[in-house]
Amino acid sequence: MSDVVELPADERERAGKGPARAARRAGQVPGVIYGAKKDPIMIAVQNKQLNKLLHSGGFFSTLFDVKVGSKSERVLPRDVQFDPVTDQPVHVDFLRVSAATSVNVEVAVNFLNEKDCPGLTEGGVLNVVRYEIELACRADTIPQQIDIDLTGLQVGDGIHISMVKLPDGVEPTITDRDFTIATIAAPTVVTEEAAEAAAEAAAAEGEGEGEGSEEAKSEDESGDS
Image (cartoon, rainbow, N blue to C red; front, side, top):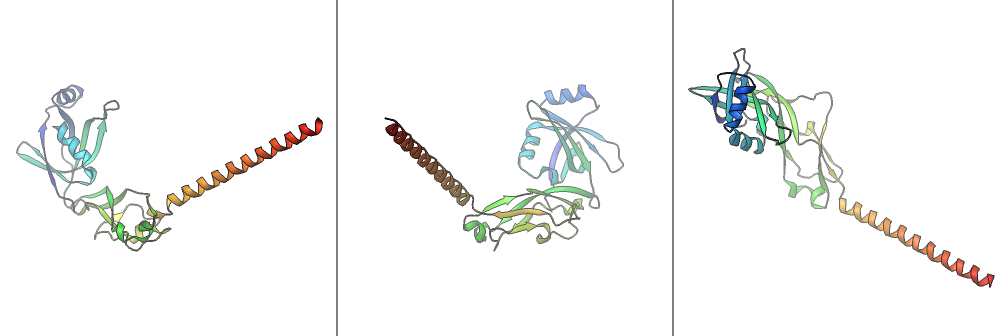
């Protein structure tokens, strides 16, 4: 389970564009806490702190205790809106959760033991199809990451969800197929070298044909004289 992170916030008295703009001018990002059949709470969090959390990874699979005055709300991030020009966050949504709340979250994949993977040590390439896996679980069982062991895998092997041991009570949201997470692809260097060799051979053949044409042309001109 991921650690719960404390996040201080100020309560906003009113919703609307005016208060939201005022919060942004003050270096804050407006947001809302909703869910659990309770009234929503309008909040504002520090822009710098939110940006740091967004860039640290795993933001949407992390539980937060948002401190609003003397109260604390256990929440899970659901959405962040960004300015299309500056790419800065302009609004954030949090969902109230409890230990029993069922959620769907995308959790990052972490690959282990690359040095013990013959396919990689012999020059193969790890081709990642899914950097994150969407999981269904209770809020108190969200894994911090999904570890995948590469030990013993050869070139051409694929890693499917059926090969991954998930924690108890955690399941993939895709259940109708054994989807691929990554493959060990053939060495790209060999492919590039083969392509270069083919290109050089084609160029050499072209030069040979050109020389033959020049020789034939010279012979024709000598015959004419």
